[in-house]
Image (cartoon, rainbow, N blue to C red; front, side):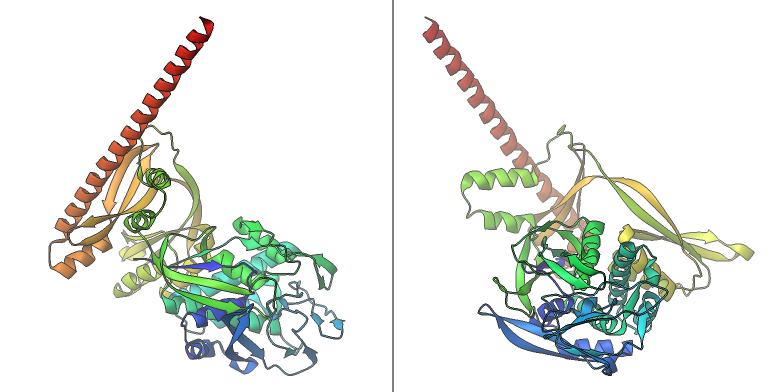
Length: 514
């Protein structure tokens, strides 16, 4: 089964809240600290956690205590978010606010107040980091492949949003040292935690907008901040107001969610295994925490068992909507933009290709395949092809450059048509098997049992794989026949009811005329 997570954000999201939820869910803080050391910034911060209460509920608060040499003492008590202290260098304190600017060739990202902040920290304005420097730190840290790819993608998306706000390229965005240190720990730490838990897909709730204004170098800015609003726009995130007039979502939190979440909306169907609670700093009218739901994606059979407790009329209606395939229903094929990456390789140990292909799938590639080719000087080589979504280009290219000997990657954006599909689970004599079902304009075109499920059962029971595959197909077709029969019966019943109603109306009209 697929390990999934759902990030519920009733009071918004910040990087430290993500870390808190992960630690509360079981990720060892020592593991995070150890894996973060190769980044080479351990002297800049201290990582620690504590259990706190928010509106009577216990949650984990992770602190990234910054240790840089003091030139200005910055207090987060009044809401300055180190995540977003990337520049304009506006810092608030409990008793006053200090605004000071520097002259740079590149723009700074916005800094402003937030309700999800860290402890007071100190900053030395003598240093700064731009995106390429941060990317180099991440690439040199020998992080797990998924963690490196995810971290690079989150920072790239954050820089793209800030660049769009200021009208500059992402590489020109200037991250103030304090903000960069804090964000590096939050972003890379979050990716490490998700990888440690084995999360394959993450979903996220709609985001609360917050309200009011924040102080920045350009004066008062409305909430949501420009960077957060741009990140939401880039991913078409569903948003709403929970009535709290404060800044609730930080740019770091928004970047993590918009980069790593597969989709935004209601919780996916899942078998819930554990919940991690990550606390924000302030007490709000509702518990100030994110809730990380962790579990396995549940199949249709499990869903039907749960729904047996529902009212029969609703249960039957939802079952038909979820499972039936009605020929001629007019469902159109889906269209999407996909990225195609390709490169030729003739000087890499063939044993590495299998590893590269697995790693590409792990960072989000839709498909990976190779073709044998003849290259210059008649050398045998291969053409590596990667199909991925546009927001995964950076992750896939970074991995190819790191793990292969290629010096360049070609990319193209293409349109593709994809069939409507769903995953249904069937019961065989040996266990559950997922079946991928696809149809074209309402007509069933394919129903294939998942290879991995069949292989696992075949190994467990020492039976041929093709026998498991046959039994799964047989079970699905039997189930489909029953479903179609139920649908036809329902249609006939509705037709009879309509006919009876029409006849009764005609008779009544005749009697009234007489």
